[in-house]
Picture 1 (cartoon, rainbow, N blue to C red):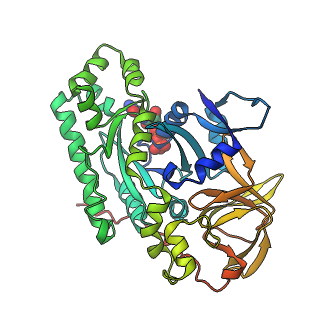
Picture 2: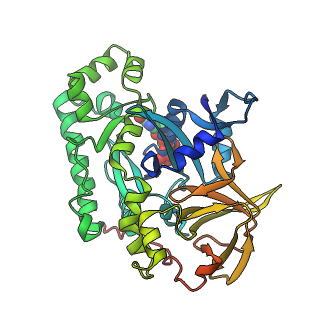
Picture 3: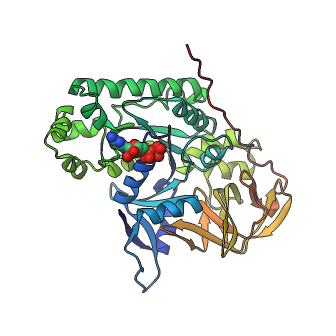
Length: 399
Ligand code: GDP
């Protein structure tokens, strides 16, 4: 399986990055085996991986093998997908989230740099304990969820449900999911963050067969669940994948319903940072202001055989450039940033600067640890981001 590479000039990529309305920072969360990996693969294959075009030179690769990307995601912290919607280009940063819930806080660390989560739920199994755990963790970090109900084919082939019952099953899982939002969402978002099938905040389909739909899409096309069953009966599922490609449905849902970084930071920052919101840095953080003072939250540290330690994080305010001096709060040390990178395609590419709202990789800040806050040297005395809390599995009572 290979992935198409979309070549863009670095300047064009940086231009998109300067416009927060064209950025989304998301990750995929799921109970084990519900289809997180298969869903991510189908997004990569459909959307096209953004890759820098060096002026005048053609890129060595037009396609990248899925396996290569899997290996890359072990090292890297995110993959940027390029998607055009409503005539505009979007950069969707998929933050690498661990395969399943662990107790070391990796999920929480990834959540800090995300504004939205695509939660995958198996249509037969429904909401499970790890679904509950990841939703709870997302809520703690003020990350807004959308829902993808996967493995609809199992309802048709294994459970042999009639069309009416498929619709009811989708409504039931949505209700279960919304009861998690009701339990764990911050009070001001309990209603707003509930997902609605009629608003297109719930997608359903098959990651394995690469098709996906929402209710508004079905209404627009004038189709009913019997249309989907018919495709399965005729052994023509490929037609569904061509007509309703999963990547398009999911990326559309993400663009429409996950907030861009400048919108998300207005409510996330007051929860994640306890400094003075009326100070210049407080205001810049709320606005994701690229011209504000520099504040970065570090989410991951990787060892690179050539470049040494690489710190990945989200720029919440300001713009980071190669050569900038940064102060690592917590480690109480000032360091010079030797290189700034973006994760693109199978590579990490050097870029001159990364603006607020985006995810950056840094070389030269070896002392930084996941969870640390990096700031401009003039901001030494501001409080760091709140410590990330590790949420344990919910207690399951056996009757
Ligand atoms: P993860 O643990 O959440 O990453 O789940 P995977 O993506 O590895 O999927 C778990 C299993 O479910 C694998 O055997 C997949 O082939 C299978 N699977 C994924 N999507 C679908 C689907 O749409 N329909 C069916 N029937 N199986 C699927």
